[in-house]
Length: 367
Image 1: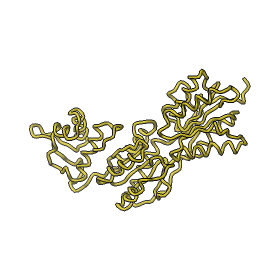
Image 2 (image 1 turned 90 degrees about the vertical axis):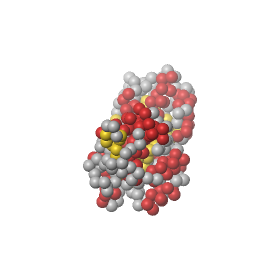
Image 3 (image 1 turned 90 degrees about the horizontal axis):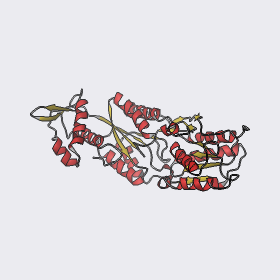
Image 4 (image 1 turned 180 degrees about the vertical axis):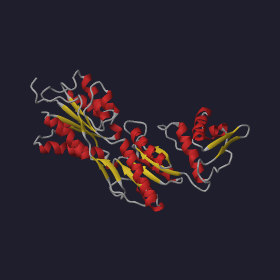
């Protein structure tokens, strides 16, 4: 069973038991091990096992017969038919925009008779390898993958080539490894970075700090757009105002660098920030408030992804959109077409739109 602390235990157990159906380990009419036996085998509580059994019973996979036990059955299928499974590997599952992506994919998959197998890599290359091993160790119809640290190469190339060798269709979301030929669904991150910076420049900001994640291509492309907007308007970018960071540094380095930039003299400090995503923008807004600065009167902010965080903070955040649920749904639909019809869809590029809220002040307006 997949050991992933970010996925509820009963879901992990459910995925494992469903894989027993698909592999033939459990056949219709066969008695299922008792709740106690399952709990002992996987080191889970009986409550967790009971919750899993209850879900599988509602969906028609299990049947409880009083005085005899629990038995396997295939809901509405002939015994010869296997469960169709699609795996989703993302960097995170329960955080930020990822639940929306997963829900969009799951809704489409369920409507088409597929079940979903989830795994997260925590944006770690070794965990990506573990996830690929686990996914390919069982019957699988296809995979939706978000690459891990896409700007740092692909040490797990062999596992992706194995997918191709086994004839397992896959596509990627948000970005892809450049050496792989597979469909990609992504946001135009370079355009988003351009729009974010250009919006601030149009509002009179010339001292703009840019904070971007450098170990994934989304961050690299957003930085590229940020720099292009400055060039287009003939505004130089001060090197000290461009901060890049890695996954491992995201919880401390950007905040410390923002404090340092904002602690300078008023005529030198940035009047605005373009942030890699909304999560970072909210964090750096906190740095400004910690120094007694007002948002947006003293410093403006633009995020990316139009997540729930953008409207949950005290000052509503101006941000760029990400398709989220639609991307998950579209990815599932395209993958099913690859599986069932042998189609080879092209890449899908979503254009981010600027959502103006309260976190940007117009410096061109005389107060």
